[in-house]
Image 1 (cartoon, one colour):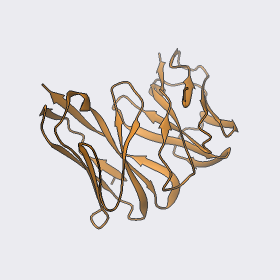
Image 2 (cartoon, one colour; image 1 turned 90 degrees about the horizontal axis):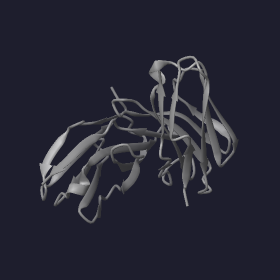
Image 3 (cartoon, one colour; image 1 turned 90 degrees about the vertical axis):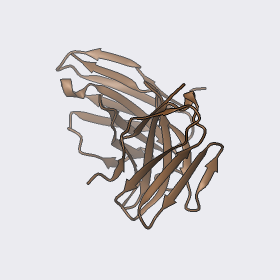
Amino acid sequence: DTAVSQTPKYLVTQMGNDKSIKCEQNLGHDTMYWYKQDSKKFLKIMFSYNNKELIINETVPNRFSPKSPDKAHLNLHINSLELGDSAVYFCASSHGQGPPNTEAFFGQGTRLTVV
Amino acid sequence: RKEVEQDPGPFNVPEGATVAFNCTYSNSASQSFFWYRQDCRKEPKLLMSVYSSGNEDGRFTAQLNRASQYISLLIRDSKLSDSATYLCVVNGGTNAGKSTFGDGTTLTVKP
């Protein structure tokens, strides 16, 4: 029973392409997130959605567009991929958008390599 | 100044050693605190929450000092399997939905 699942696990693509990463959670959580972990292993939040509404949008290029069709799904579409987009992208979910019940459960990550 | 700061390490310790990590946070309105563990090429997973009174889970002890705005994680009797990166996480404050991760502290336990 996978709680938070992302696809694909690995993605290698050329500069300039457009790609999507999908995320689904079966935990009944109402908040979902996208994080980016770069080559230095720093984990940074990109977006957060609560009940399909965008609540956090950090300083992310607008080439990145999240879409949440329902509470259980949060997809990430990236246009015009650049070399610097190479990273591991983690989807996560939690119950509630604030403390105290904010343990986040992470997907296994999507390792994106732009060549 | 970063919102959440950790000593990146690496910490290299022998099995059986006691090791402590600290983490400081800048937002005094932060409301909840966690330690996550991330193994190489894996996703972060919750290790333990950090409560105001301090809490213990086996060999792991977490402490919170709100006055000085830091949290700590103490690992006693280190095992080889404790080798990982430990991430300090701070939630809440001015942006209730936001979890801010520290950059992680890398621990290697050697035989």
